[in-house]
Each structure stands twice: as structure tokens, then as C-alpha cells.
Length: 306
Image (tube, rainbow, N blue to C red):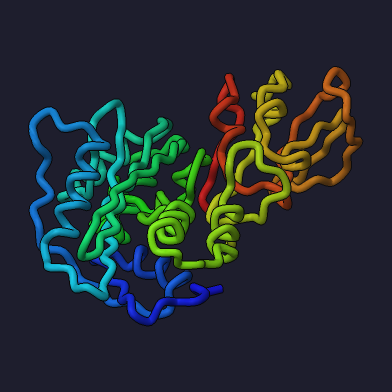
């Protein structure tokens, strides 16, 4: 649903060249203009991540005069990894270096937003924690060959995660896309009494997997990867069972017979761990989050590209 009681005397101007921000803003505001910014985004000496994004979004909003009937919205997104600011990659090799750093690690995505009219300016920021799966060099290079990394902080887009980079997130999904919509809606309502429906935004936020979220819709359709447990290596330690995000994505059996393609021929399921002799990944309920592979202490779980 779009913005309700839209004030005709106010014109919204999105100061950004990002197609993701344009897409997100269009979900709540039917008509607005887009003004790509032309500023230097160089970091200052000893500048921290929050200070940087707040300075940059204010600089973007102040590059032009604001008309009396206009509201400017500018945004900037960075990644913070080990207290180091990471922006957009400058080359193929830089993108490869960044993604290799993020592999099997946690980082923060910080987006700063500036809302400005001809009288006042308001700046805020939002943080989201992002947890990455382990990524091989071949997988990273295969992704980079798609040439879709250049205009994205960290070289990746959460909305284009066909390569299953992301294990899960803590926080706002739209913030990782580049514009924290729930917070933006709240500030527009508080500052300008713009009454906005957030139904579509809430749906976006809820549909993306968060840690231990139950019964979520499967997100990598058609599936790019499949996970398998090597029954000869598995020591039935139950680590994957404890960490699994769904009740049925990993199952236990005291009898299990598989064919050459890892399909079940015959089985006897059990709910008691002490009785379990086999642990098996249920591909019908698996969302390819990769948590099981991360926690397995004997590397019995593998991921293959379909």
C-alpha cells in the first residue's frame, strides 16, 4: 500500500543513484524525483563508521538548494568489519578481497539517512548484523564473473543472494538493501505528519530469514545448492540438530537406507537422539542457510551447486 493523505504541496526528491533505494521508496510514495549526487565520498582521518555515513548523507542533501515545497531524502550505506569501513569495491580484485574477508564472519551494515527541507535537517542511522556462510574462492569468482558487485557496499546485494552468501541477519532487511524503510516511515510521520502504510515493508522484513525463524518461506527458488551428510563421516554428535532453524530440515533415523542419489529407499524415523544412528538433511524443508555445515565438527556436511 502506498502513502496515504499524501501532501500535494510537498515534493519528495531522492538524492541517490541507487536503483534499490528507488525501488524501496516507490513502495510507500507514488511520485518522487531522483537526483544522483556528485560528491566526494572519501573518508576523513580517524573517522568512525557512524560519523562517516552521517557526514556523507548530510553532504549529499546539501549539494543543492531545497525549495520551499520540497523534501530531500539522501542515504549512504557502508559495511563495518573489525572496525574497518568497507564501501563499494573499486575493482574485481578488491571485491574478491572484501568477500574473502566477510566469508564465514559477521559484519555490520550501517545506513545513514538525511531528511531535509528548506528549514531543517534530520539525520539518523540504522545498523544490521549480517552473518556470512563460508565461501570458497571458486564460488566468489563465479559470483564476481556475473559483474553485479560494483555498485554495492561490500560487493554484494542481499536481494540477489542466489549464491547463498548470507547465513542470516539480525535487524532490518531493507537497511541492508540500502534504505531502512520502517525507520524512514516513522521519521516522515513524526516530522511531516505523513501517514504511511508500512504493510508492504513489514512483509519484506518478515519474509527474510532471521536466526531460528520458524516456518519461513524457502528463499532460493529454484535451488542453487543442495546439502548432504556423509553418513560414513557423521558421528551423530547432535550439533546440527541443536542449531537447525526448522523442526524438519534435519531428521534423525535409527534405520536409513539411501540410493546413489542420496534419496531414501527405506527408513525408520526417531525423535530420540540416543536412538539415532543416522542424521539426514531433508531437502524439502531445507532453506540452504548453511548453519548445519558451519557447526559440524567433522566436516561431514557438504554443499554442492546444482
